[in-house]
Length: 125
Length: 164
Image (cartoon, rainbow over all chains, first blue to last red; front, side, top):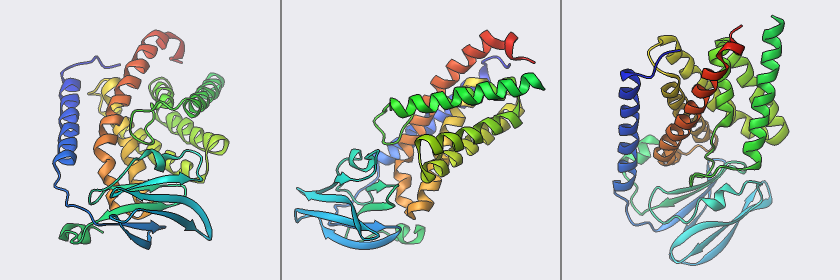
């Protein structure tokens, strides 16, 4: 087996640098104030809700309610889910443009919108 | 040949036990879905003691069996994407023979998360998922490092047993 040497230190340093860069991009990425959230089931938008209005929104997948989205104080979060791991509930509250809550088992994505989505987003989609 | 088969069975059982442990005790790193990747230690051991082909065999069988026992169809797809991408990267790096196991494990951890997020982007058809990538990148590197240290220590001490 190879000894731990200079090559390893170089590669690990590059990896740490890339990681820090990615986090910096994430932290300093300009976020526009958001106005609404889209609810997407299986990639299709099934509803758009205003973030300034408090609401409790049941989300239906194939006719049965699987998740409950709650909007409170301008923030949206998943308050209930039928899936066993409840990861969507652990993803917390979202209120900035581009933030998402994802429920993989039920194929639900909650996505924050702003009034003017940038050019890049429409192309990348 | 007989020894190889029995080792494969042993490693597969070990990988399944680790999958089970990770299911019982979620090592939570603050990022949803983040795992320690204990099974990757087994895959690394197979890769270094038995070889590339056997590592793929154990990896795929582990994902399928663990998926049927503790998961569902979706978790199989995610694990398979992550596991195969990370194993492929680790095999290539090992073939280059320039890097230590720990570094290779770090790269494997990162690519495991990359594979999973790629599948997730396709499943929910939403590119915004890549927003999680900075955390998954660092998380993969950290867990990969821990697993790499553990595996290299195990290999050091079990070398004489495993080399067939």
